[in-house]
Length: 81
Image 1 (cartoon, helix red, strand yellow):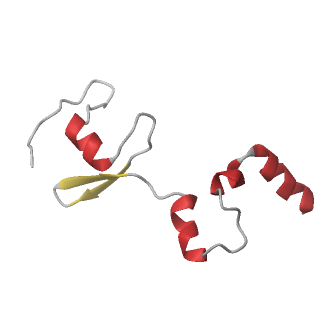
Image 2 (cartoon, rainbow, N blue to C red):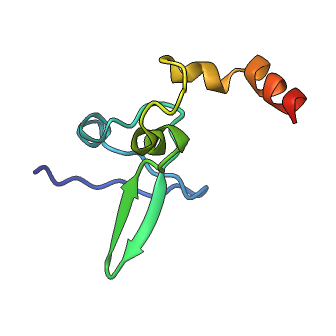
């Protein structure tokens, strides 16, 4: 494991080293969740809805779950109610 350091800017920003971004799968624009544990900080990607759909099985959902996230589908669901 590599050791490296970053400085905190006046705006509270830091640079995440390249090898950590690659290893963790962080990409530009990703949200990052911070958790304080004793004397260290845990950074991880927050869970989202798509992470939890797996336990439901197919449940009649389309094969391409991205279809669920389109504005047209949301409008269609609202019109049904």
